[in-house]
Amino acid sequence: MDGQWVRPLGEQQLGDASYYGSEFNGRRMANGRRFDPRSTSVAHRTLPFGTKVLVTNLGNGRSATATVEDRGPFVRGRIIDLSPRLAEHLGMLMQGVAPVEVTPVELAEAPN
Amino acid sequence: MDGQWVRPLGEQQLGDASYYGSEFNGRRMANGRRFDPRSTSVAHRTLPFGTKVLVTNLGNGRSATATVEDRGPFVRGRIIDLSPRLAEHLGMLMQGVAPVEVTPVELAEAPN
Image 1 (tube, rainbow over the protein chains, first blue to last red):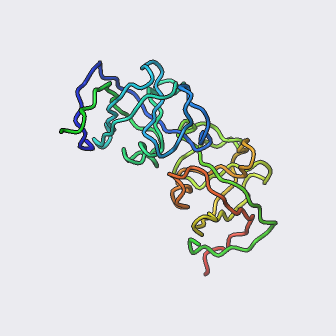
Image 2: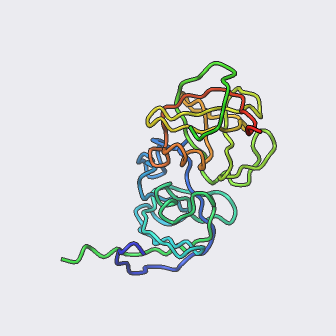
Image 3: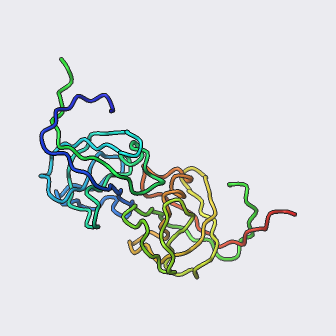
């Protein structure tokens, strides 16, 4: 976990994750904002834009929180498409595709 | 340079490089082989398949040799699409798109 407090909000989903190539750099995502490889943006087929998700790489247990900003991926068996930043954080850049768990969550504000 | 002896074979080309996302994992490249993020495959619009190229990141001077195996990229100003392995080697993963020099080369056999 990257030290962020989260509270699960919905059902956990299992499937494969892939990540964006930089051909998408600067292009508009489905929510209208421009794609940035350094961001924590992800594409998901159904979750509303702005939904926070916890993504866990089931291959190595590494996880990260992200925000749904785009629609996709449209490849069978793949449930989420990650920014390169997230793919690096989850240790799956060279592997390319990894089994993940995706859970919609609420992020705790920084403790005051 | 990654220590590989090369002999330039053709004119050097200048332009931007991007890299593949892992949505392409396992898919067929234009030369019929399957795309592997760990490979040193690149896409170029015109160089013949099998051509070896030296790719230098003009932003940091890092370079790597690669093999043309696919056609693309088809975005104005971009002259080459790299495997994630190459993008990592050239230090451009987070940047996403980097100015590069691409030179067709002959690779020296390992000195006997």
